[in-house]
Length: 193
Image 1 (cartoon, helix red, strand yellow):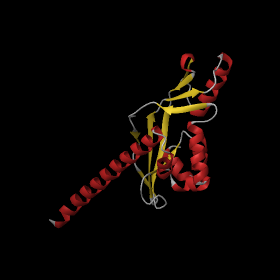
Image 2 (cartoon, rainbow, N blue to C red):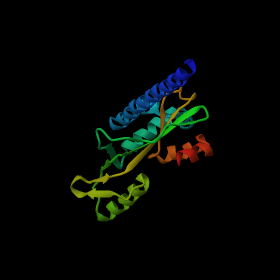
Image 3 (cartoon, rainbow, N blue to C red):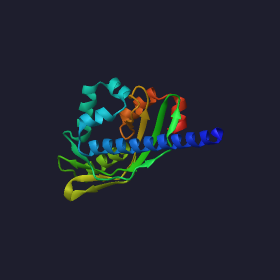
Image 4 (tube, rainbow, N blue to C red):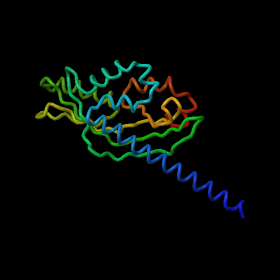
């Protein structure tokens, strides 16, 4: 009788711990999105994978975030208050857990100087490349671009992150490049990166 109960208990413990992991991941995903939405750069830094921040340096990382959101050319703002996140299966690879999260994440770029038809075409092409989307619309009256994109986060929980969920923002070209150095080929392959 004891042998029949053991597998059931093991199954229940596994299901419970898995549910806790996905719920914690959902909470942390919402936190990093909200931090980006409200431009809380310190919170974004704390939720970003530590090796990435370490490679850039915290001060440079914070400066880069500030430049990404507001600079002499434009101000960028996220548009959705509550996006719908799509989670891949959580994959345990070695001593780390990984999850790929994707979601619709439209943004608006408000330009500081008035754009004419030529400069708006040039800027639209830059934004298409930067945001990896073709869905870019210029709004003359607002002197802004509406960029509709699908964003992707890579969530990692490992010893480096204190076994808490931390993130790579794959919208950021620099973070994409650094992730190639931090994540080994086997992990990238299993995550489909």
